[in-house]
Image (cartoon, rainbow, N blue to C red; front, side):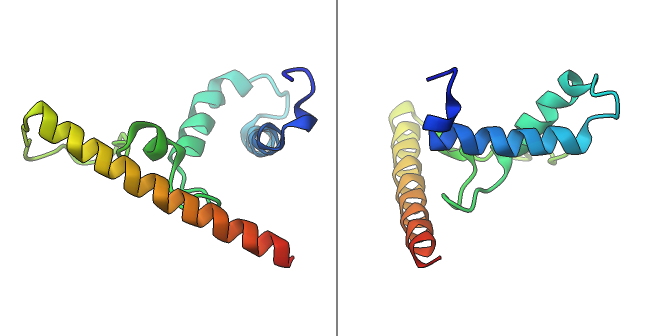
Length: 113
Protein backbone atom coordinates (compact mmCIF):
# COMPACT_ATOMS: atom_id res chain seq x y z
CA UNK A 1 0.00 0.00 0.00
CA UNK A 2 1.17 3.60 -0.41
CA UNK A 3 1.36 4.01 3.35
CA UNK A 4 3.30 0.81 3.98
CA UNK A 5 6.09 0.45 1.38
CA UNK A 6 7.78 -2.32 3.38
CA UNK A 7 5.31 -4.79 1.88
CA UNK A 8 6.51 -3.98 -1.65
CA UNK A 9 10.14 -4.91 -2.25
CA UNK A 10 10.50 -2.80 -5.40
CA UNK A 11 9.14 0.29 -3.69
CA UNK A 12 11.35 -0.29 -0.67
CA UNK A 13 14.42 -0.66 -2.91
CA UNK A 14 13.56 2.52 -4.82
CA UNK A 15 13.06 4.45 -1.59
CA UNK A 16 16.41 3.24 -0.29
CA UNK A 17 18.23 4.28 -3.46
CA UNK A 18 16.41 7.58 -3.65
CA UNK A 19 17.01 8.58 -0.03
CA UNK A 20 20.70 7.70 -0.32
CA UNK A 21 21.10 9.91 -3.39
CA UNK A 22 19.24 12.84 -1.86
CA UNK A 23 21.37 12.59 1.27
CA UNK A 24 24.56 12.77 -0.82
CA UNK A 25 23.62 15.93 -2.66
CA UNK A 26 21.45 17.81 -0.18
CA UNK A 27 22.98 20.73 1.69
CA UNK A 28 23.42 20.64 5.45
CA UNK A 29 20.15 22.48 6.06
CA UNK A 30 18.26 19.88 3.97
CA UNK A 31 16.30 22.63 2.27
CA UNK A 32 17.40 22.15 -1.34
CA UNK A 33 16.09 18.63 -1.95
CA UNK A 34 13.45 19.87 -4.37
CA UNK A 35 16.05 21.50 -6.63
CA UNK A 36 18.15 18.34 -6.94
CA UNK A 37 15.18 16.00 -7.38
CA UNK A 38 15.03 16.25 -11.22
CA UNK A 39 18.76 15.48 -11.52
CA UNK A 40 18.47 12.43 -9.28
CA UNK A 41 15.45 11.13 -11.18
CA UNK A 42 17.25 11.73 -14.49
CA UNK A 43 20.33 9.82 -13.32
CA UNK A 44 18.24 6.95 -11.97
CA UNK A 45 16.16 6.61 -15.13
CA UNK A 46 19.20 6.69 -17.43
CA UNK A 47 21.53 4.50 -15.41
CA UNK A 48 21.92 0.87 -16.40
CA UNK A 49 20.49 -1.26 -13.61
CA UNK A 50 22.32 -4.41 -12.62
CA UNK A 51 19.10 -6.39 -12.28
CA UNK A 52 17.94 -5.73 -15.85
CA UNK A 53 21.13 -4.74 -17.66
CA UNK A 54 19.28 -1.82 -19.23
CA UNK A 55 18.06 1.59 -18.13
CA UNK A 56 14.45 2.17 -17.07
CA UNK A 57 14.18 4.85 -19.76
CA UNK A 58 15.10 2.33 -22.47
CA UNK A 59 12.56 -0.16 -21.19
CA UNK A 60 9.82 2.46 -21.06
CA UNK A 61 10.48 4.34 -24.31
CA UNK A 62 12.31 1.67 -26.34
CA UNK A 63 15.26 3.90 -27.14
CA UNK A 64 18.21 5.51 -25.45
CA UNK A 65 17.62 8.99 -24.16
CA UNK A 66 19.52 11.84 -25.69
CA UNK A 67 21.60 13.55 -23.06
CA UNK A 68 21.98 17.33 -22.75
CA UNK A 69 25.57 17.14 -23.96
CA UNK A 70 25.00 14.62 -26.75
CA UNK A 71 26.07 15.88 -30.15
CA UNK A 72 23.18 16.72 -32.43
CA UNK A 73 22.15 14.10 -34.93
CA UNK A 74 23.76 14.71 -38.30
CA UNK A 75 21.35 12.57 -40.28
CA UNK A 76 17.70 11.86 -40.03
CA UNK A 77 16.12 8.69 -41.29
CA UNK A 78 12.49 8.96 -42.22
CA UNK A 79 10.72 5.66 -42.44
CA UNK A 80 7.19 4.61 -43.13
CA UNK A 81 5.02 4.30 -40.03
CA UNK A 82 4.66 0.53 -40.25
CA UNK A 83 8.45 0.12 -40.75
CA UNK A 84 9.12 2.33 -37.75
CA UNK A 85 6.60 0.42 -35.66
CA UNK A 86 8.22 -2.89 -36.65
CA UNK A 87 11.56 -1.52 -35.41
CA UNK A 88 9.96 -0.42 -32.15
CA UNK A 89 8.45 -3.87 -31.60
CA UNK A 90 11.75 -5.58 -32.43
CA UNK A 91 13.66 -3.31 -30.04
CA UNK A 92 11.09 -3.84 -27.32
CA UNK A 93 11.21 -7.62 -27.65
CA UNK A 94 15.02 -7.63 -27.59
CA UNK A 95 15.17 -5.28 -24.59
CA UNK A 96 12.57 -7.24 -22.63
CA UNK A 97 14.32 -10.53 -23.40
CA UNK A 98 17.64 -9.08 -22.27
CA UNK A 99 16.09 -7.65 -19.10
CA UNK A 100 14.42 -10.99 -18.32
CA UNK A 101 17.73 -12.83 -18.74
CA UNK A 102 19.52 -10.37 -16.45
CA UNK A 103 16.79 -10.63 -13.82
CA UNK A 104 16.93 -14.43 -13.88
CA UNK A 105 20.73 -14.28 -13.58
CA UNK A 106 20.50 -11.88 -10.64
CA UNK A 107 17.96 -14.16 -8.95
CA UNK A 108 20.33 -17.10 -9.35
CA UNK A 109 23.16 -15.06 -7.85
CA UNK A 110 21.02 -14.05 -4.88
CA UNK A 111 20.15 -17.72 -4.24
CA UNK A 112 23.86 -18.50 -4.04
CA UNK A 113 24.50 -15.73 -1.49
